[in-house]
Image (cartoon, rainbow, N blue to C red; front, side):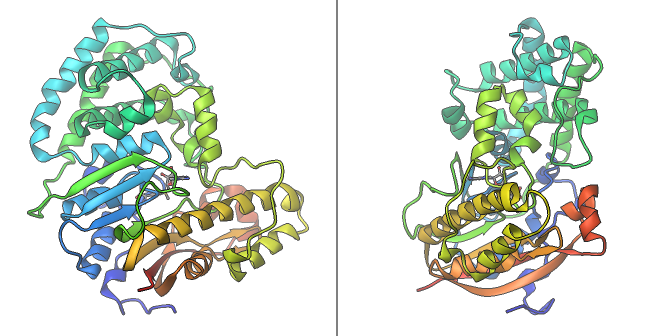
Length: 426
Ligand SMILES: C[S@@+](CC[C@H](N)C(=O)[O-])C[C@H]1O[C@@H](n2cnc3c(N)ncnc32)[C@H](O)[C@@H]1O
């Protein structure tokens, strides 16, 4: 069922971020982030009691978790990428903590300049001159020394990280990203490695760090809602959610798109700023849904993926172009396998009658339409969910427009962003 524009007030709000107003959501310009107006419209439509448990299993930059908290919900967000978890955690900072930002930022910078030191293998040296990498690392270490309980363990620390520690790490991410700007390629999600920036200088980096902290404070708007909810953020895989059956009232989410966006690669600089080494980065990349990596072989498609998915996969497999039968078929296969496992998990943890809003983007493989919104609906229907409705928005920021090579096939096409609303059977 396609709903007419305006027939459902909740869906009159585009899931695409418009970048209009300054808010915590402007702290990190995440290519795939959706809008907090959309999350609040969806929550209002559901009229959930305060404290209801809402979920985003692909929490990304934390739009659902931060907005859910603002609206008095118990928001639960998972992501496989620790950098995304830090970005999402930063947004949960409470207004009174802003008072501590400037004195703490100065302290962190002073402590960093007094305690420099780096291993030659530091991942930041892929982008920055050695001395600049030393400066950035000294800030990261200084944040940890001041605000994070040792010993350093990525999973434990990221899961338990305080909002104020995440706030400073987010500012450090902005510094690293802005200094490495020239390493970006035409594809906004692809960060090129090993092209070093010019030497910046320690003093300038410390000042930039303090400036980014102050900019984050300036963009903070005190929530207008009277009751703040609770947020739980955790590193987890959407294919195996650490939640009990029927424990969630609503899910508002957006999976990785099926457009060969490599989400781990898009946060490569942030992960390096956290100190993630190459081997761990490779492991994260392989586990992230949407990865461009493919296994040597794949099994046969599962009929439970639904006819739209099987039909699309077959069109990819039988496409005459080079590599369709090999690399691209396997790449899509792995994506749908992971999506199906995740849909089964989302359904399992949703209480009977609970709602699920999934924002997806239909796309094209060559000239073949990948009807992801229908595929998600059919996977849901095979997992005790019914599609309540779909609402479509024309996307202006899609891969057909940013990836010049793909324009050969997609010259006049408009790609849609679709909100699929599903409900768990009673
Ligand atoms: C489209 S983004 C979500 C955007 C989010 N709605 C926002 O507003 O920022 C998809 C997210 O899924 C995460 N992801 C990829 N594979 C995952 C997996 N297996 N389990 C959990 N999260 C995963 C990526 O790291 C990325 O942050």
